[in-house]
Length: 298
Image (cartoon, rainbow, N blue to C red; front, side, top):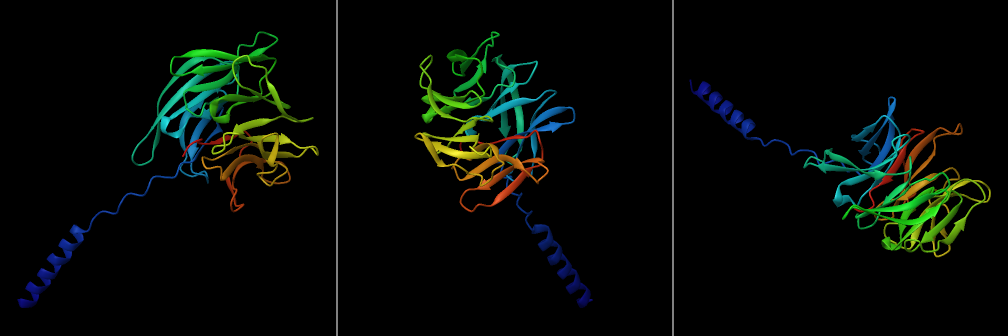
């Protein structure tokens, strides 16, 4: 009898202890650092993920290809220009819940743009530079102001390959494939900064130095490199430590480089992230049509 009572008491204590055990805490939100474009069946999608490509979440799907740019992180917006035949500048907004899930909350058409135009948010997040208004001979470098929905034309020429806000948003740098220019105000004379004899020039702004640009280019040997350009020359001509790298951009602290490269000697393309302090390279995605970007602010 006594033995049974003791056993019952032990069972009660054991059950109570088990019932009182707190639930484990939820896992921390994934460290989402990059956004990129990927093929999706017959269309294209925009996803966000960790640097390793884990925890992918899709924010946008399209039946045609597109180009995009991320606003400063707190703004939770992404600008998109559709490819042919749509040629529309769009503004996508998204939310992030407490578990770290990214969800699109809206998308709106802002104005027409040149099909597939590169584009760039200003450091303030209030303006978007892009190309538009092809007249059969020339097109325009335009700036859309999100505060009042106005459009200002900065320059006119046959083709703008890439555009980026420069010097903290006081000027715009642009490339016409093989030449890099800076323009300091609407209709100001462009200043030639850099040129190459072959290939094309892709550009992005450094994040912590307003006077530096990330320039993807072909060097005199024809090698494709990503360099850091400032004050008339390269302070580092090969950030990726690779002769087969392109379309580079830096993270919010200028300590990591995202860039396109090759997986093997056959030339299969992929996108990588290189830690500029350690030299460690992480593969994010194996794909020939990827376009990846870090958020410009932390």
